[in-house]
Structures are given as structure tokens and as C-alpha cells.
Length: 186
Image 1 (tube, one colour):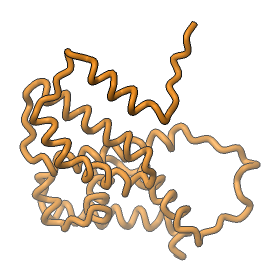
Image 2 (cartoon, rainbow, N blue to C red; image 1 turned 60 degrees about the vertical axis):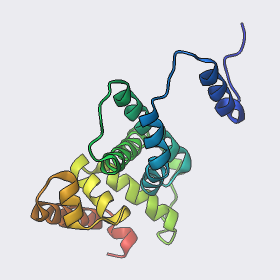
Image 3 (cartoon, rainbow, N blue to C red; image 1 turned 120 degrees about the vertical axis):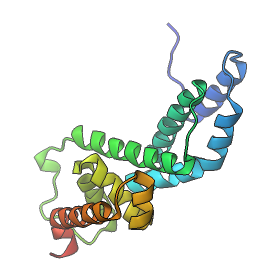
Image 4 (spheres, rainbow, N blue to C red; image 1 turned 90 degrees about the vertical axis):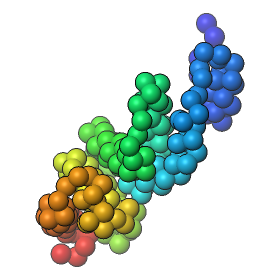
């Protein structure tokens, strides 16, 4: 029986070759335009949340696969940048949640005394805390503090009132501060 395993270094070339040989797959011009314009934005957004390039690339593929499926049905994106940024945030949060759900560590592998000086450890703790948030607060927090949008911009983007966005930001910061207290010196 032949091996079905493709070496990691060859998977892109193999995928490109297969797509080039496949005559039934036609990439719509609109999809290609959206991909070229926003691939970097989607990747950077996902990377800020996951902290991992491989996960960010997986998120990018997920987001653009959704866009491709929409383009097959001629569905038009109203606000492309907003949609893609939000889709990247939500898909990245899903990655964090799935990673946390499947995470198991034997007690003997735990360090005796956690070191809180490591920024990587803090980033991982923040990722775990974000994964425990409900979707809307996690999305708003990511837009506000990871993407740098103001509360009024977020309110317009999500169709919410500025007051509601401010309340969610405040409550989310309080919750994260409580969960990350040991890392923040509280």
C-alpha cells in the first residue's frame, strides 16, 4: 500500500500542483482580490491572538475558506475589512479554546514555583484567559486592545452602542485583571 503521508516541506508545492491540475476549480476574481488585499491583515490579527505563526496560518486558511465558499454562492461582503478582522478574531479564539479544551498536563510536569517574569508565560496566560471569555467580550477586547480600535469604532463595526462597548470593555478588563492577578503583581 503506498504511503499517503506528504512531507511538510512539500505540502504547499503538492497543493499548488494539485490545484493547477484541477480544471474544475475556478478561483473567482473577487475572491482573489479579497485574498490579495486582506491576507496580511487576517494573519496579523490571528497572530496577535494566538501568538503562534502556525496557528495564525490555520486561522487564515479557515477564514479565507469561508470567504471562498461565500464567493461560490455570489454572497457579497458588505464591509470586507471589518468582516475579515472579526472572522480572524473569532477563529483565533476558537483555536485558543480548542487548545485549552484538549490540554492535559501531568502533575509531575508542573513547575514547583511558577515564574511570572516570563513575557511568553504571561502571553500564554492571557490566551488561556481570553479563551475562557464569552465570544462577544473576547471579540471586543481583541478589537480594543490587540487591534487598537477605539470604543466608537468598535460600536460602529459591531452595531452596538458606545456605552455598551465601554461597559463590556470595563467588565472584561476587570475579569482578566482578576484572572491574571498573579502575573500582574496584584
